[in-house]
Length: 163
Image (cartoon, rainbow, N blue to C red):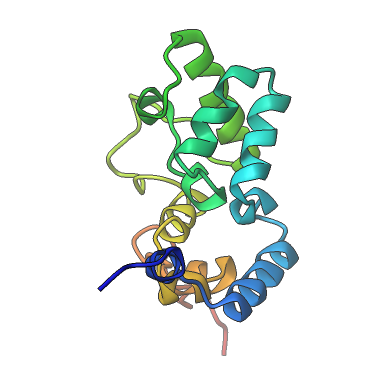
């Protein structure tokens, strides 16, 4: 049985465009999430070129880096994409963090804190492919993952009342 190009495209990443558009609208409405999460491969390549790194445009296109994959492009992964100059890696990684509003990783982060802020954790979930990730929006994510250790419930303990 011969496999056609159409068959191969069907096996590729499939997204429910309606749920992605709904999620995109909710994320843009929240004002917390960058529209870059929803960029195509060409838009990501244009961004890299706009930064002044025209020579890496083809690397990003060849590796099919779209907005979701851009989330995962940190300094340790850019080398695998073909970005080899250390100063370029630092500059591109910093620009991606600023674009996506991701905090800079600190080596001295306290273990008593969550491993990253809510936006970073949300973007990690958005980078995963599948229906659940397509339907996930930032407001729902923050409501579902609220940690009581870091946000204790409000109680009336300690309030003095006079009868």
